[in-house]
Structure formats: C-alpha cells, structure tokens
Length: 209
Ligand SMILES: NC(=O)c1ccc[n+]([C@@H]2O[C@H](COP(=O)([O-])OP(=O)(O)OC[C@H]3O[C@@H](n4cnc5c(N)ncnc54)[C@H](OP(=O)(O)O)[C@@H]3O)[C@@H](O)[C@H]2O)c1
Image (cartoon, rainbow, N blue to C red; front, side, top):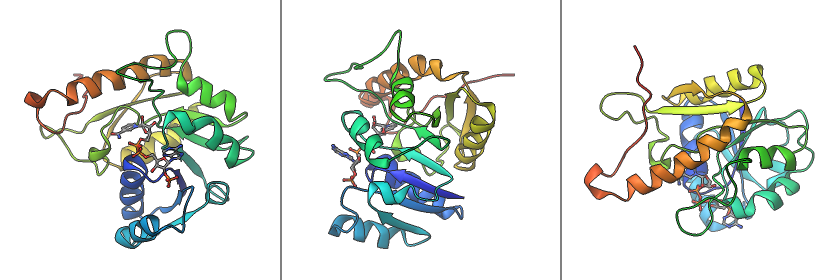
C-alpha cells in the first residue's frame, strides 16, 4: 500500500519506519523535503521511504496520515489540495496551551479535520499512543490498544488492518463523533507519562473476556 505520512516528527517518523519495514511504500510529506534533516532521516530508515513536499506526497497515496501539530492542521490540509474521496487518518490532538484541548465536548479535532478536508473519509486513529511505541512494542506482554473512530465501515476496516499490522489491538470506538472522547484521552496519557513512577513507556489496554 502507498501511504503518505504528513509530518516528519516523532509520529511521522515512527509510522514511516514501521510501515516501510512491513513492506508498504511510504512518502513523508514535509515542508522541507530536501533539507539535511529529512535527507538523513530517509537514509537512516533505508527501506521503501521517500520524502516530498506536502501536495506531492499525497499523489497516488492509498492512505494519508496527518501527523502534524494541531496549529498547522488547517493550513497543511489546504496545501494538500482536494482530498475528496481520499482516506485520511487524523492522528493529531487539538492541544492548546497547558494540559488542555482547543476544541471539545460538542465538537472535536477529528470532526474539524473532516470539515477542512471536505469529502475525505476521515478516521481518527493513533492519537492516543505514545510515538515511541509505534514499532508495536508490547507492554506487560500485551498489545497496546488503539481506539479508532470514523463514519464509514469500509474505511475503518482498512485503517484497522493498517494499524493492526503495526502490532496494536485496534478497538472500533464508533462514528467520527467519538473523537470527542478519544482526544481528551490523549491528555490523560500525557499527564500519566509525566508521572515518572509509572515508567518511561505506558499505554492503554482494553481488557475483555
Ligand atoms: N508525540 C506523540 O507521542 C504523539 C502521539 C500521538 C499523537 N500525537 C499527535 O500527532 C501530531 C504530531 O505529533 P509529533 O509528536 O510527531 O509532532 P512533532 O514531533 O512536533 O512533529 C510534527 C511535524 O509536523 C510538521 N509540521 C508541519 N507544520 C508545522 C508547524 N507549523 N510547526 C511545526 N511542525 C510542523 C513538521 O515536519 P516538517 O518540518 O517536515 O514539515 C514536524 O516535524 C500532533 O498533533 C500530536 O498531538 C503525538
């Protein structure tokens, strides 16, 4: 599968490494694809990864992942061009200053992304997992759970297999409106990560019979 990962930070790099290692073709969409940093990043990952400018990165991509700061989301989505009919994974969190969200309760970043990326098939996913675990690291010998949500069953099924391939336990949390619940969960995750007594790597797991 051809995957465009927009953003070359912790999340973008982690996903590019893992998905390319699994045989997917990954293009990192960057504001400066020819910079020294990105050139050495691509060389370090080595396998089937390349870098391109934002608009170019999504050409021909089966799946696009938004892995950029919330403050850059609107402008970046506009730069990507017409996204109608495209599968868009929103991994962002609409963080405001301090431990808070810029949007919530009766709306969410995921729903706002869907409005900005008119016509795209948006799935909120990967926003609650620490980027350091994107290689599928298990904790307590168990897969970390990743809740996802979106309005189209077919798109969710595709995203579910891609995220599952990374080594996660994927949980369908419902329609895109559930992003209102997934995004605050990231705040709890950040807060708990700051508690050194819990160790350096933590993740959520949904237990069931
Ligand atoms: N870090 C985590 O553990 C984690 C986990 C789950 C979700 N998230 C969410 O995922 C998103 C990305 O997180 P991250 O930790 O990967 O962020 P990051 O390390 O800060 O990287 C973000 C990347 O976005 C690109 N970008 C585009 N416009 C930008 C701008 N105006 N300012 C700064 N960077 C810009 C940059 O790539 P170029 O310079 O190449 O354009 C940058 O490397 C965020 O919304 C975050 O809340 C993070």
